[in-house]
Image 1: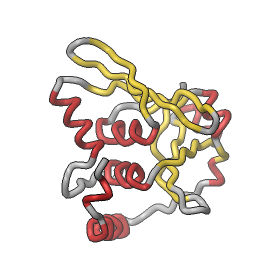
Image 2: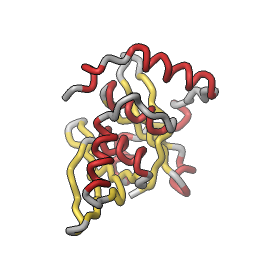
Image 3: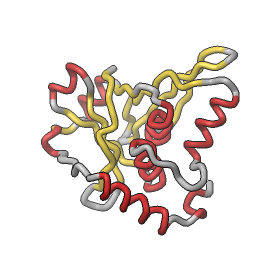
Length: 166
């Protein structure tokens, strides 16, 4: 396993959302980034969390975090464990009052939760080898604080509560 951080959320050429995970430490010197395609709602949720913002009402991932806290549990780590026929799989390692649990989860939900709880993110070496791309292919635009605030305000103006119904 390689520890990673969220480099950012981007759009691919067809307008699909991608989360970019970048290795930390010695693995970062290899210059690989892992792109994982995710839905628009998950992308918004992750962006809000990594930017330290709050949605006007709790999003699903905020609710999950509050539920875990309410029952005295915590997320110890998130692992992107494998790829099967183009689908990424992840696991949440959770400790609660009754013990430790490993729960199968989508990577997008897992990263959104880790972004809210501060849980460390890991990717299996095989996944990074198979699906990682050269870091040079990804040049994230470093937004100014004004641009980030403007983007969030636009999101709040355009958001429809029905977008977040399950």
